[in-house]
Length: 41
Image 1 (tube, rainbow, N blue to C red):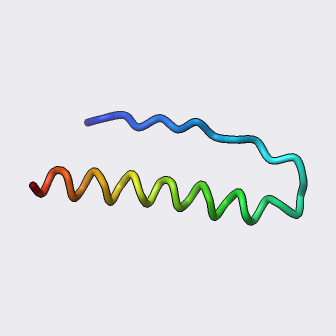
Image 2 (image 1 turned 30 degrees about the vertical axis):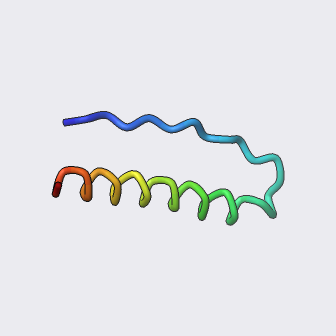
């Protein structure tokens, strides 16, 4: 099983937490989709 690592930027404001969560979820989703499409080829 491959290990995926991320460079995660820290957030410095409570109001930016939701945006940070969305960006992190987006990165993870992109990695999963890329992995699935590359293994399908």
